[in-house]
Length: 195
Image (cartoon, rainbow, N blue to C red):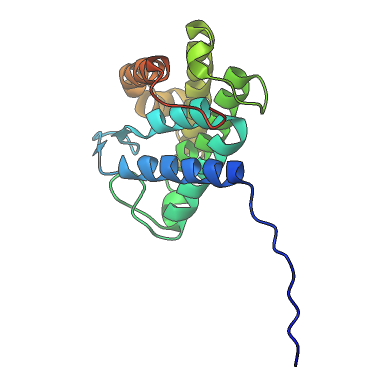
């Protein structure tokens, strides 16, 4: 009995590298989960996770940046303890702070589109600091709009009350994360996917 052999097309090395970086960034995002500072009157804790959302968009671009965040959400959805406070499971993806989580891939994609001006990646260290900061601020507004909006809807809060417990307290930390992301990118020590 003869066996039939056929050629197998190998996955392009660029795709493998992009997936590996996306998986690494998803892992770093999950590794930031234990660093969560609960706030007594807010369902959302202070975390470092938004910093990695920024880096996903800046370093991986508008395609692989969101892909890395989706890998992170999938890992948490199946129960791995990668969400804030070392939690996991589908319940977290519909809890009071789920709007923030669902905004992350959109924010990473937005940052990637603005900074890279499309799907072809360029070195974010060579992009003007003003453009990078504008992209990060816009993404932050998106994250908080979705997070606060979902929280207000789910908990039946007035909009200002939801903004007070879900956004205002976090602004100083977000400014620090923006500064950190810009410093990381401008250091030139991390290559983009195409580099």
